[in-house]
Image (cartoon, rainbow, N blue to C red; front, side, top):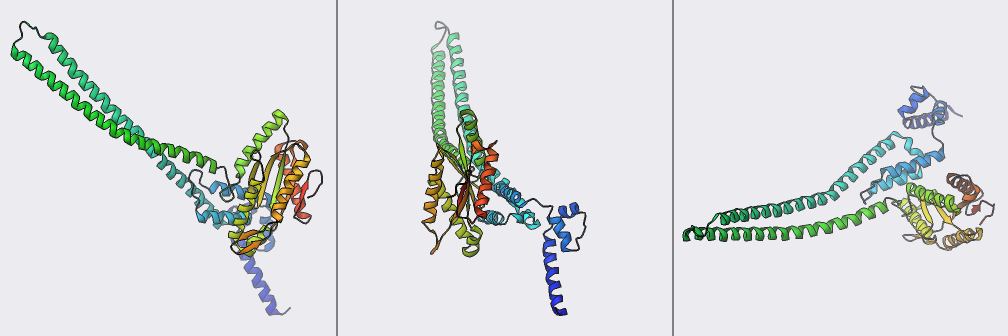
Length: 387
């Protein structure tokens, strides 16, 4: 090797070293007790202390969910692109620039949710204010009218017909007429105000009905992954707990199926992330269509989906996988004018084989990775059967 070649190689190594060093966090430097790593070996020691790759993926998924507004129905395009980026490469969460972006998105989530909540509650506050005003007017008018009538009654009772003159009676008559007119005018005003208030109240009631529907829809949407429509990780865990309760109470067995789209990163690299999104949405829609309403489909992270299925016998699970495999493999996914062929791998475990629900999930995950390591495009069951 010539001196020039050695110099080029050293420059490449130095550039690579500087690039990796720029991605090391201050906290990692403190933990490593190296104020300034001087070699790639030093960097390796620091990087080995990081979280295992599988755990990084789980953390990345949780971070994505934490950045999504829980009340607002709108998801910004920038956030969607950012979530896809860290979903494809979870290790990016260690980079300082990425962590700063996450902080900004999380703060934005709080701001957006707070703003929407403030807007939604304003109409309720206005309704309460209107009702207080018009009811207060009605009560005041009623009190004033009652007071006038009471005073007149006292005057009438104090009059002695024998001693009273015609002039006294005329004055009393005038007061009675004036009181009647005052009460009539007050009632007209109250009725007019109440009618106007009733219309405003009806408008607000319609708004509040609409708000209740929006909040109900928001609660439903908050359970689902914003891209695919499948249950998100948190809601899937809630459903898993529900299935587990049935299992413990009624001995009703269930199965966990872990799905993973084969070579999904390659699809993104060749066709772009928009194509990847279309495939994720379509695959999710197929799973939900081919799965009973009483069962559950969730997005576990990235291109991984997970199902919880009630079943009567093993043959039923075989047929379920065969139906999905038949639809996926005999059709091509369309993106613009391109037809993209995909396959999937899966692992299937049943609850009665394990100690806990989380064990069932872990075993299905292991069977999935076994299917991927054994050539992909296959499903491996707990009993070693392959489809």
